[in-house]
Image 1 (cartoon, rainbow, N blue to C red):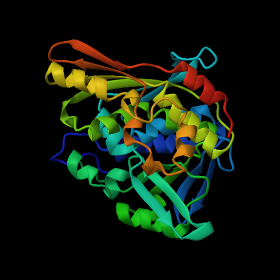
Image 2: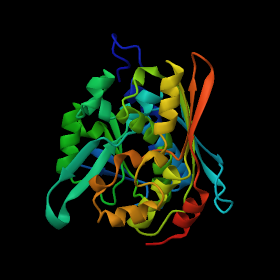
Image 3: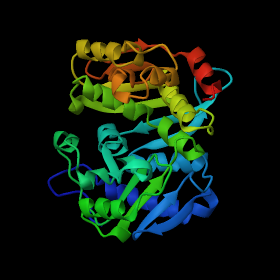
Length: 329
């Protein structure tokens, strides 16, 4: 496997994540994961027909960050009933979060009742380069193997697997797809572990220069898993929207850091203030009818490294987190 391209000092996401993929597959029995070959690719079942678990979700989240992030379980602030959560850190958070973890590649096959659809995230995105974001990041990876994580409740068809491999420029037997239904233990964990990625995505949408983002850390409470998709989708979103905290370190003037701290939290959205499942229902299931500025952590600290001053925005909503985590739809 090749490492970074000679002209780019940034690391290869594929090379860094490859050992994580190998260990995940090797430890499948311990992690309660299923392994099968479909269209030549290795498909890892982390919650469809096999139970998976919290540790599987933690390791999948680190894989999804291209080996450039660390995810740990521990106590986090929030409702007393839900004291445990995840803490996420990356020393190269733009590449880890936007270049790998962000679910940016729309994948579909077929139509009607038997259609398959999922958003692809993970280090393989930098090989496929199907998003304009990679031109903006000015990043191109090179490798003979690829890995993706999908929030999927079914195994992708062989034709779609062949398309993914061909787009990445690799043989199908060098492709690994990790499937994590949102309501599964692993799925719930890896979604909430996107608290830092959600902040980076909104920061990018606000037009803050990515080159001035130096470091960051985030945390969010871990919702109870299980139930149906709508229940899980609501809880995992609310864990970030009303329970997530992110601290970013940036360069540049104080006024830009202060403005970012005020505009970044979810409270800056017109849709803020209700559990996400209610917002989704009011929008009649149309994600595009929901204010995109809602998708961000509840509380943000931005430190301006040039001056050493820090600016704070947003606040936690423990009552909304409690309500969401107890609601079943």
